Length: 457
Image (cartoon, rainbow, N blue to C red; front, side, top):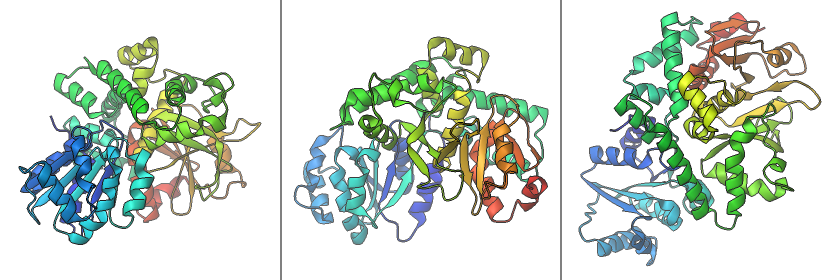
């Protein structure tokens, strides 16, 4: 079964552009890139030439005579005369380009030539992306794809865009959800958190209507990631990368969720593991949340590179990596509080990252002041606190009330509670995190001024 994805709309918009550039879709493995591209290609092109550099390594030779369009097209036809390369009616789809990043050099020439549309995709693109970028800068369009977010999960469950618009209107109008709506969306959200957004897992759940076999699929995907580490981590200590990856659930289980290299192995030092963490992040396997030096704008560059948290990029894979007791508790009792709230933070980190945010937190030394995440509007820094229960947000209140943080005018608390606002603190349920960026953009555009004026000091 095909699951509707946000990339579908992007691909349609790309195709409609008069001067479209070659497209590079990057993202971790098994998030649905190939399936989405194939579906789009079938609907929009008379001819599609698909080349997979992993399954068909012979095609790595298509650039052996040069990177010009004529050379590449001729060599494709020599290797397989059945491939039809009809000018102005053909999409060339280069898949698994991480195994032949040199193909990126051809994108400039394809863009100038304009006879063929080109899409490139790969599951470990981040690893070789610097090389790809240097060979094609200015001649391509990029799109980053993730596993399904909660909105896409709602689509998979049969809910329309009208339902999402209704959810958004609750935020803009500061209107609490009804008890029926809260029960429904929280139930769907717990299912989503348990499953994650990997298409194979969601499809199995939608098809069977149960969680049967989903844990097995999740754990196989984790094994696949570990195999990728063994295959692609060239020049780095593969054992160290695997060790960091396996320690994510263990370290998130602690009250202090800052990732500590010293806990990964005896005598481990940050300088020896820095490349490992960057590798995992570039591969799209983890999300890294950096500790701000001080809660102020701008965010980029304003952090301590030695302090960070690491989250799995997909909550379902994180759940599958938990010990059996915690995983069973979540699945059987729908207890999101497993691992001392680590799952809540991981889910919010995932939703923010899928919305396009970089991840930042703050922990003041020798103090209890700590904030889980920070996002921003055009002019304001916005702290985001994640509460496992509907408790008070002490650190948030400190940030809002103190004159020491002039960039902070209001904050957002995410919890199991309903929509509400008081003294500069906007309270929202977890399940709307995917709408947060849209809400703050509306604020910048002046569409939600009344909402924030009610609460902002």
